[in-house]
Image (cartoon, rainbow, N blue to C red; front, top):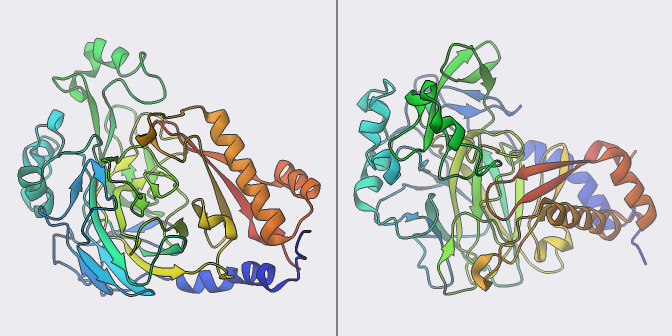
Length: 420
């Protein structure tokens, strides 16, 4: 039996549009200290370089200390938290892009960015410290800030992560196509490497890193690429990696997303968005990393425009039976924005620890459709045939990314289509 759309649960879900919009207002700072940050419409504005401790922060502030961050791996059930907060608390994290820190880039961010004309004062001190002192002891490339334990979070709960602010820490980023990965393995970067005309972008190992500067325009901040053909694009910052610890003692690779979140790379999860993740270990153990300044659906070359951000989140524990979260979020990631509900499909939500990694987009698509159907029938109260018809007629299914081994597709269900 399907619940009626007029049930308290459906009413709460439909009524969250105005509540979420109110929660989406970012931190307002004075002109002298204003960071580059996403505006309420998702664009970005620019301020000073946010070195560690520079600029105002909101709530509990966590620096990306070299002795505390993880490099290439995610927290598991044995990882100790770097901070403990209460449910409903606000936290601000310094996050670091791995671009410019990696071994094939020289593991020297000062030297790497100097070749693109970036002065030392615009290279983050914590990025330099991590490159020098943090063991790169995981299989992935990402630098991960956290984990943060949330009091009262237990397995079977949901952690609600509200994105309140997303300042850019630096006015530049990097887009990479490396190690024969991306949407066209075997074709690119191999063909770029073989062409002498591309020598300016290819390092000695045959990997490609394209530097992108940040510039002001009437439309806000834009990324600018090098070359003879002028090309720029609006910035829409978001965190590529947000998650909770998995219930395993094995090393958790930072690359593939799972049912605990991680590297889901959904570009809708910018300012004003909310991500719901099923808690697997006591304290939830929230973490974030892989900061993106902008990403197209698919992330086809391998990375987005990667650049360090300082996100602010509100972390809230939701218990079983809560009507503030769709029931499916107790088993699977789910998201929403002021305009959309975002069911998330993954080709292998169980992760690679069991020995498999499904990369088929068809599998991710079927998962996304199933998640969307479950939301519409179980939470909104639609009859199955009507919900299926609605998804076909009015819902866009977007490719989150095709490059993280576990591929992703998410649905965008318009909130404005529901209610009076």
